[in-house]
Length: 282
Image 1 (cartoon, rainbow, N blue to C red):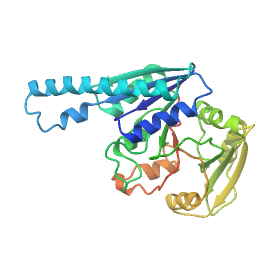
Image 2: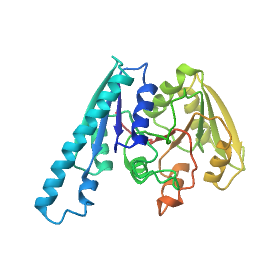
Image 3: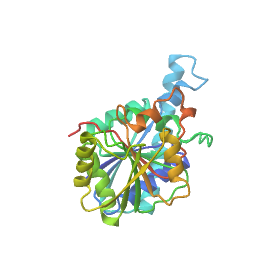
Image 4: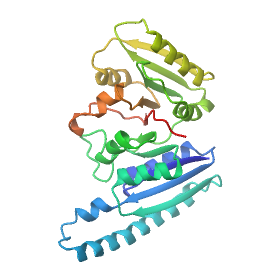
């Protein structure tokens, strides 16, 4: 049983991510937790000038959220009446990243799926603030779906790596199950001036090969000091179906994500983006 959390702000991007999720797992037994957290909206309401008004706005927002979740339920019953899928709908007064992280722990979630941007949909940035926070801090793989992107089978996956991390078996298994049925190609993209791998890198490379023993692997080494620019250049005009990176200390992705402000994030991704966290989880 695959356990998936799908945050929603009721935007078109969020609904698109839900549709992508049910299509991605249409051949698997799935438990989908569709979650809306509305504390920020209540706190930012300019009419809230007293505790009594806050409580009233909170109550109204909760009822409206339940109604909108009901609309999503009706739409899913129409577009994806899959007997292997169970859906759970939650509206809660909380901060989204905390709500999602707590739910990950409570249900031992396998995956979070969400749109790259939400209701504000600022096209000047690649990732919205909620998506960035969840990719950085939630202890679970996160799959972000670009605006308007329809599901396509992940037949070509690009996985930038420096082979320095001893990856966690559970997260590699998640990726394996996503690609195993499609005769997919995984391109392991390594940025270095030096073709020679250290013993640590050789061992980690071997571990990856064992995890994907029935999947075609391709190794591409490119000279580049700017990892972000290198990834963007490689993806340009390529028919890649999925980009995969690992968020861990001293990883490629840590250097990209942990910038001072969101607008400095240079990845120009118009493909589904899977962020694995490389954490010990049962």
